[in-house]
Amino acid sequence: MAVRLLAGPFPIRTRQGAVPTSGADINGYYPHVGLLGQFDDKPHGVISLDGVYEPMASQRAFGLYGWWPDRGRLLTAQGDFQSEFEVEPKILLRNFVTQVNLAALAFPSQRSWAKLRDRRVYVDTVGGAPPAVVVRVIPTGEIEAEWRGAYPGTAIGPGRNSTELFIWMDAPAGTQGTFYDSLEKTFSPKIHLGVTGHSLWYAPEFGVLVSVTSGVPSQVRIWSLEVQPDAISEAVIIRGQAKAGHVATYQVTVTGAQGEPCPDEWLDWTIQGAGRLEHSQSKTDADGHATIKVIYSLDDTGDSTVKASLRC
Image (cartoon, rainbow, N blue to C red; front, side, top):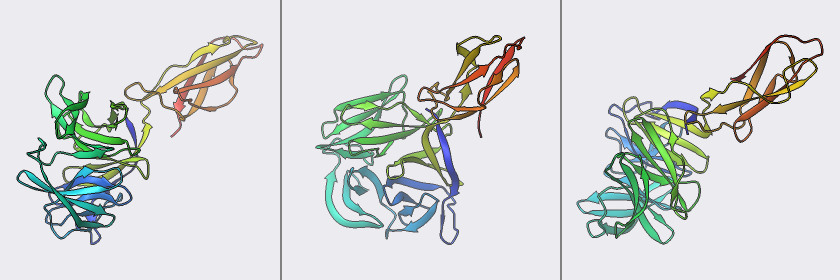
């Protein structure tokens, strides 16, 4: 589904106004804290949803590659090893946890991974036509689920609950994402931004998507999970008749770019020719349908044209 832009773009910048000269490197999103990343020669820090960067670490060679539903993990790669650190809100690189031998786990260095209930998983890509994103179990590498039609450049982050993950990739057709249900081992319908060159994360505390452009200028955008309307069908009569002395109910369907219904959209109605509208506005239901009644008097003759348009 094509989602709706809510706010932005907000330029990434320091409080003093300095902006990235070579693009921001975003490693993840930590709920109730913000985006984690760095740019230029700045140390790792937190970037708020309005783009303001605050340094939170004393060095640059760290990135958020892992995700726990109840906590984050900062990892630093050193050959086949990564060291784990707990992420405390607003305090990065505290509390050393352990060192992980990635080679022993058959786990590609700096892959995006997560802990779900009693196991660790990571996302990987496999070839094919089209290629696929797969969720693999650590340490065996066994494929738990496959999302065919996705592309490399995949990362993982928090989902809508403790058993769900959000996975995104920057595909040729544009940045895409999906929610992975670790209980059902299923993927939600693809979420499309309609633009390329963005990293994409879900902010569960706000119920919105957050994207960051990978180049210059580096900008933050906020997206709603509501479907962006793309088309309105022609009005058709579903009840009654369009003739003198009758009442006819007309219906249109509002859909997104992939044909998905758009609920709760307000429409303005117009009529030309015979008849009069009972009301001038109506709202789409869960299936994207909106209806209006046209009343034809006993004196009405000729044809009528009924149309609907989205309220801006």
